[in-house]
Image (cartoon, helix red, strand yellow):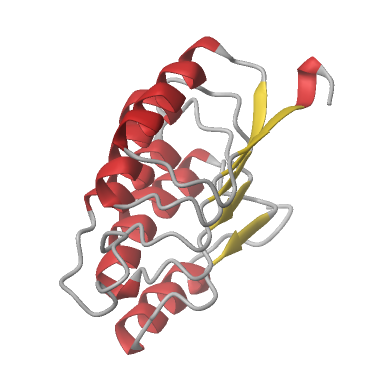
Length: 168
């Protein structure tokens, strides 16, 4: 990988809060990083919030972010499958998407158990603001297996029904 398309994969690593703090700091120092793969790395709501606020918000070079298989909206302990949603991390990620410096083109959130409560700020505060700026994630947005219900389907339907036509 050359310096213009640097990638970092920490997939399947067991990241803790200190690891995420170090990663956020390194994002500030490495403006050539394009791909950040954090699949199945135990990133929970607090870690995502810290990464978004302290790293991604100031690094305008990351174009691909994969957070799949992390419980970004409800914590990461193995017994937490159906507990109350904690959406502060997703809300911080939404603010990154809305930021003028954001270049995220691919966002992987598959198997993240977002639920409708997690998807709401992502769509309303992140994707809608990015669309107004003309910088939606334009390659892919993976939301499969995220525990979405009818409210989420309605949010997404409204978002896509108001989306401008390609080339417009």
